[in-house]
Amino acid sequence: MPTHLQPKIAPKTSVQFNPVTQLPIKLAGSHNFSLWKAQLIQNAILATVDATIGSTVASTPNAQVSWDALHTAYANKSQTHIFIVRNRLAHLSNDSRPVADYLHQGHSLCDELATVVSPVSNEELVVKILTGLGFEFQKKSATIRARDSVIPYRELYEKLLYLQHEDAKKIPYVPITANFAQGTTSIPTRQGSNNNQNSNR
Image 1 (tube, helix red, strand yellow):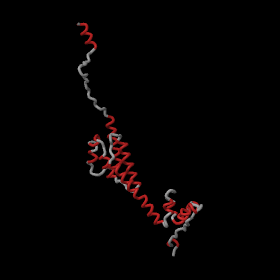
Image 2 (cartoon, one colour):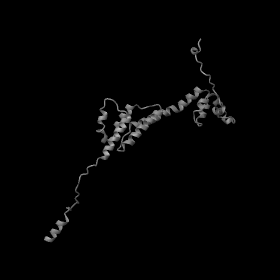
Image 3 (cartoon, helix red, strand yellow):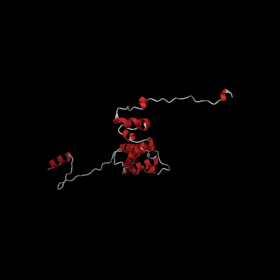
Image 4 (spheres, one colour):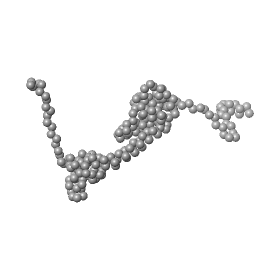
């Protein structure tokens, strides 16, 4: 067989085992014997948990039982955490604060949910943000709601900041009101007219 048609053999790779780094627990007596023994069997799990949880892994006979014990101990708490964060997102509202702060909080809650494997879609995030906007943004966001397709979060972010910036440039109209003290009426007059009245008198 020609040389160029012969199958290429991948180079051999060797797996090195370093007891110092992979088996860090040294037997120091009966008080840590269970941890020392467990690292020989369940080293992968022990390497990824905190030292305070190591005893939970060490007390189990094998890796499967270790996994089940950790799942029972902490998976339910993760579901509780997801519920709490999603509840905060559901009740998120603008509350007349700067729209940038409102948007950042909503996005950070979505990032937190993504880390616990409960991601929020772009459509869900956009609907939640538009629903929680204050009254002053409800009419302005009507064109965004009327789109044929859901607006991407980044574009929504820029549009809402632009609307708030345009509002900040407007000078609010302050109506002129007259205050009348009870029992007295004060009518301002020009100084010149007062002098003329005094001279006539």
